[in-house]
Length: 231
Image (cartoon, rainbow, N blue to C red):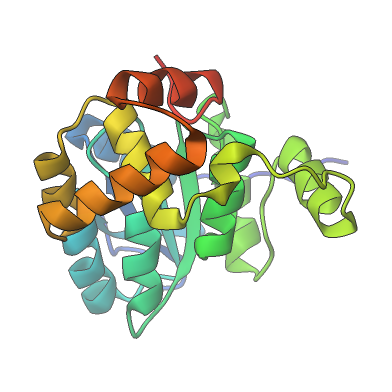
């Protein structure tokens, strides 16, 4: 007999379920926050304790609301997963982190796991899998797709020993590469990451050298080919 899913008949407001898994939803688009909130509040064991639209606000909300799980939904907004993961892990009440991302490529996912994420979901998942993932990471486990599980095993066993060019990049260079591929200027990237423009200039120069690329157009083509960004 299958396990019965616990759902309520009517959505609750945030904070009504004091005994449920406390969740903070971070997403760059208000409509996405609203959709996820509506989904999660129909489950008896889940409690949406707060929401945020950017990394800086997310840290404040997490510190105040102290959730068990943070669900970071990134679908082409100005949010950067690696930046937000770093901010959350530096917080005093570091929660479990689940990523729902349009960029669930193997390389990006492995970087997010190394940065401190506890689960990765691709954009084509159903609502039941999102809920299952929340419950899984809350229990102290990792939630990975079968493909990502296989990739992690291959890395651990040394099966995939040839290093891809993008893996030579530092996490910050990888972030800058993705922003450049999406058409952002160095000044815009500096503002998003909270660093100086000269620092971004240096990261750009380093990634161009490591990837043997010449300009931003080359970066965009490379990132699209590798699945780092979607068009």
